[in-house]
Image (cartoon, rainbow, N blue to C red; front, side, top):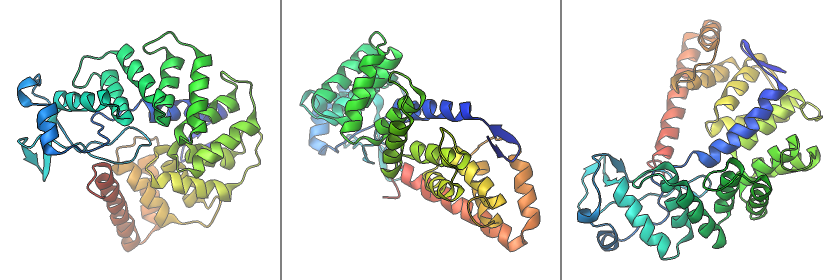
Length: 331
C-alpha cells in the first residue's frame, strides 16, 4: 500500500488501473485521425464541399492519430478557412476522405474509418461497421487493428462478447510488437482474466511494454516495484526511474507518485524543488487530488522564493512543450 500526500492506493487499485489504463489507451479514439496527408487535388476530388453534410461543427485538421501510430495530421480541402496557420476541415469531410482511402486499401485509413464510426464523428455511430473496418485493417496486417478487435470482442461492441476471441486478438497484436497490446496481456496474465494466471509471464509482458515506451505500462511497472506487488521485491530506485519516464509522458498517476517520492526521498535523494514542479504540473493540468493544495503550500514554504518561482516556471514550460506536441506544433 502506498500513500500520495493523504490518500492511499491499495493492491486492488493497481489492478483496476491496469484494466482502465489499457482500455483508455485503446478506446480513447482520436477524433480526427489521418495517417497520410493527401494532395490538395485528391482531397477536392474525394471530399467535395457540395457533397458533405453540414453540421456547423468544424474540426481542426491537425488532430492526433490513433494510439501508437505516430503523430500525423489531416490535410484540409484547399478552400477551407485557416486558423493559427492551420486549415479547418469538417468531420464529415474527413470521414469522406478517409473512407475513400480505406476503400482503396490503406490499412491505417481503415482504422480511422472504424474509429469515426465508433465515435459517431462525421457519420452516424455504428459499432458493427466499426468492428468491420477494424477487422479489414487486421486482415491487412495492422497490429493496432488487432488490439481494437480484442477490445470489441471483450466488451461486446459490434458483436457478441467473446473473451476467447478477445485474447486471441490481443495476443496477435502483442506478437506483432504493439506495446499497448503487450500491456493488455500483462494485465490478463497478472490477474488471470481470460487466461490462466501467470505472474511471471505477465511481468515479462509488462516489462516489454514499458521498454517500448507505453506510458501506462511504465507507470504500472513503477507502481508494482515501489510497493512490491504481485510477489515482486520492492525496488524503490527502479520504481522511481520508471515513474519518472511515465511522468514525462504526462501520465497523471505517475506524476503524483513521482512527486511524492521526490518529496520524501523514496528511491533517491529528497528533491523538494523538483517535487514542487511536478505537483504544480498536476495542479495546472487540472488534477483534483485530495491534499494537492496543501502539499504545494507546504513545499513552497520550505523553499526559497527563487526556488519556488523556478519550479513554477519549469511547470509552465513543461506544460507548454507537452501542449505543442499534442497539437502537432512541436514537431
